[in-house]
Image (cartoon, rainbow, N blue to C red; front, side, top):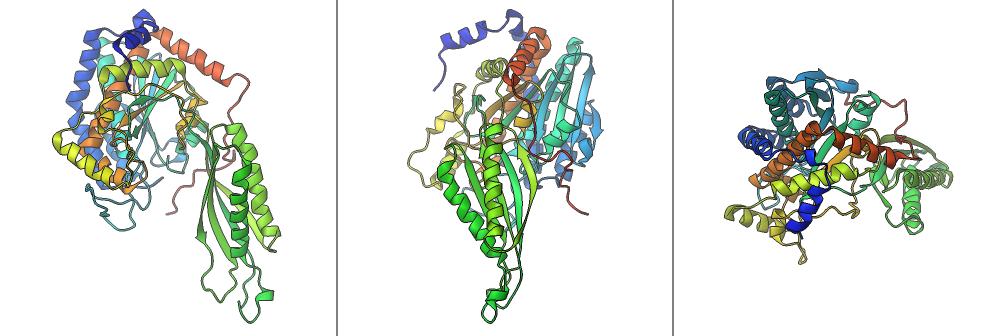
Amino acid sequence: MTYTRGLLAVALALLPAEAQTPADTRAALLSSVDKLAPFWTAMSRKIWENPEISFHETASSALIRDALRGAGFTIRDRVAGMPTAFIAEWGQGAPVIGIIGEYDALPGLSQIDSPERKPRAEGAPGHGCGHNLFGTASALAAIAVKQHLEAGRLPGVIRYYGTPAEEGGAGKVYMIRAGVFKDAAAVLAWHPWNANQADDNPWLANINVRVRYTGRAAHAAAAPDAGRSALDAAELFAHAINLLREHVPQETRMHYVYLKGGSAANIVPDSSEMSVIVRHPDLATLESIWERVRNAAQAGALGTGTEVSISTVSGYANYLPNPTLRDLIDANLRRVGGVHYTAEERKFAEAIRATLGSSKLPPLDDASRIMPPKPDLLSASTDVGDVSWNAPTGHLLAATFPPGVPLHTWQSTAIAGTSIGQKGLVVAAKTLALTAADLFHTPALAAKAKADFDNALRGRSYRSLIPADAKPPLPTQ
């Protein structure tokens, strides 16, 4: 589904006249992206070949950081005390326009670029969320914009936020607490997806915790009455979660895994551990649901004579769409267009889609289309949501994966290392570059985005579910 030419003309007409960056300027920006793209698509492949999980992205962050330094950006390292977080910026004065980049991988999704399940290394991480494409596309856009500002001697600062640990580590929350977003007139971001769309979704606020039970070991046959089973406590808690599902708002998502449950069947387990995530599209509603889940965890201990401890791993806010930035991104995404596959890419994409076991997949040609912004709920979370509570934020989705291919799978990992994923990277970079240029050329746009931001916050305030005194859960040496 796409807008007609007439609707696109109306959308563009609603923007201030000066927001329509001259055609020759847009053409020059797009040409810059095309010239720079081979370097950055090759880098995306390097990062894909060396996937690093949250807070371990040493090589990945260094590749992007050093390339930005080489392009003339000033670098701030170890932002918020995180070794793999950095800021790269160029320019002076106002406005400050930021572009977010991510580069962490997911555990256990190792995969070669094949339409058959073949891990590169069994149990190793993989880029099933396409962050190898995310970080590089954003850097590509930032450099193209820097060249544009430099050539035109335009005032303002283009800033790249190198943000670690989106996958469960909430790196951006700690960067927010360090104050690095507060002077930004606008922050732009994107995410790899299976469609092209200016994002108007709230995403899901979430809280991610570890629940640990401590009991008393005993011989499971000879003296079971002397034991207090930590596994029983965990199972009682899990049962309570599953009963609770019927009595929470339907948009809620609750999921858990057992990380530890005992070492031998003939020993009453004296310790157990669970990873639990609770999500909802509204942060305040999530807090009330989480209170009930926490009570259920306490009940598991009370009912089994064990003790419980709960520690927060991360917490994300829902995303606050910004109408001004959404519409600007939509107009520029339509100027750029979607992804067009070669015959070889179509064959690969169809082979991947055939492994999904579904007969109701979207048409493959949807990758070439631009979907209209719609607030359809995406049942996923991102710490870009937290940024959107602290600065006007615009977000887009680009078709780095064939239509119907879900994220966090071996199939998406395979695609993220191919030219299919890289074509989506270029679509995202061009859209980000054009949108940033519009904001630099038109102060009225940034002012309008700020008004939208203030309106979204009216009567509400940001409070992360991560305790205020928490430190980033960095890996131990």
